[in-house]
Image 1 (cartoon, rainbow, N blue to C red):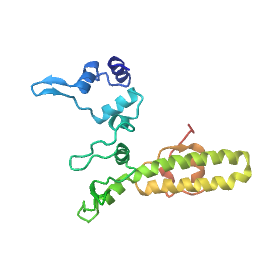
Image 2: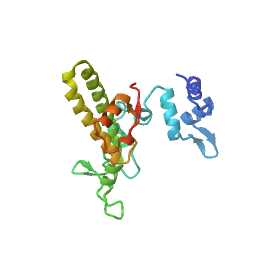
Image 3: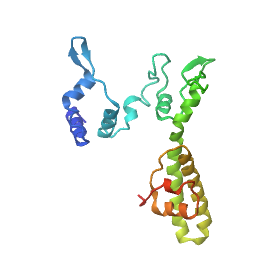
Image 4: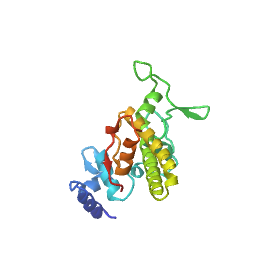
Length: 209
């Protein structure tokens, strides 16, 4: 894909302002009073570029498989790209301190007045990262169990078990004040019928995609 093609794709995605000239400025910079200066890319533009290039946006930032290390923050050492990837997705807690005895460790300093550590605050903020993929997995498992139960009555017990597992993650999300994505109509109705939800109004039914 050349720059003209990329600009056309960006326009198709609703960003006609990302023109050929803008892309050149981002890639090579524009000469001015302070020499050549590249135009920065905003977060929303990063998503547009990722979709236009059919590439996960994070891969535009982190060269997985092609570099040994990437910069992190000025006060910390460069780290391998996949480690930084996990930080950016919330899959892992950043280990900025060190190396100590050859290992990097999480920060133990308090970050709030109540004494909560930086690592604990990060874990709280990243909690939804673990819940949404698990919700998707349990939703799919329950959906398949429902289809089996529709064909074989003896599979009904397994279906109820899968519903209970789905309800647990939905209830966890409710306690964390997280928005629960719409569930397939049949699953939502059965969760409510079996009284498995802390708050039945927290879910909305929809058709199965």
